[in-house]
Image 1 (cartoon, helix red, strand yellow):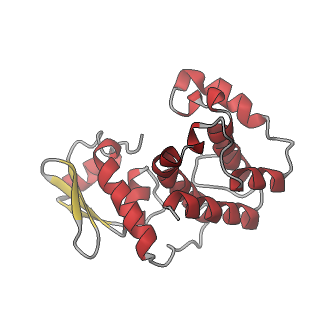
Image 2 (cartoon, helix red, strand yellow; image 1 turned 120 degrees about the horizontal axis):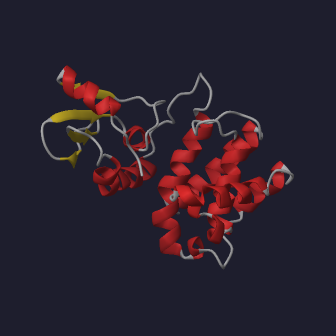
Amino acid sequence: MTLATTERAAICDAFAAAGPDRPTLCGEWTTRDLLAHLLVRERQPWASGGILVKALEPITEKAMQGYAATPWSEMIDALRSGPPIWSPFWLGLVDRFANAAEFFVHHEDVRRGEPGWSPRPPDAARDAEVWAIVKRTGRTMHRSSPVGVRLRTPDGREVVARPGAGVTVVGEPGELLLQAFGRSAVEVEIEGEPDAVVAFGTAGRGL
């Protein structure tokens, strides 16, 4: 089992428990919007360019709107069943490396969309894969920081996300990944001189 596999199942369970109209951490998106985004990304790759390219956003939004009348349970079942054979994500390596962070972060977007959330309990296998993603993507996610960035877990593991003097972000691997993706509903501590902490906090993060 990979992180992509376990988080796919977990986010589907979270969608089923939440229903289609709950808020998420994805701006104004409801859970239905978020699930439609995931389905378009995986099942209509020709319409998903707007996820990364602003000029193509209308195409992606139209594809997402195509799920407006689809029963909620059918949408969940479609995601749970996995990518179709024509999808790039059908390939095992693509699924593992492209969907692990996607499903983990969006799972937490559902879990933390309303007050009262708490982090999931530690899980050695899950956290090891998440930490590997943090190390692999840290420089990209923090490329806009005007100060140096170090990422550190409470047990002392550390990676330099941006060289230079600046801040150290301390948290469990999942919290570091969510923070790197620009989420504010996280449990991290930011260590450094006050000016550096302020500068880091105003910088963009994520893809």
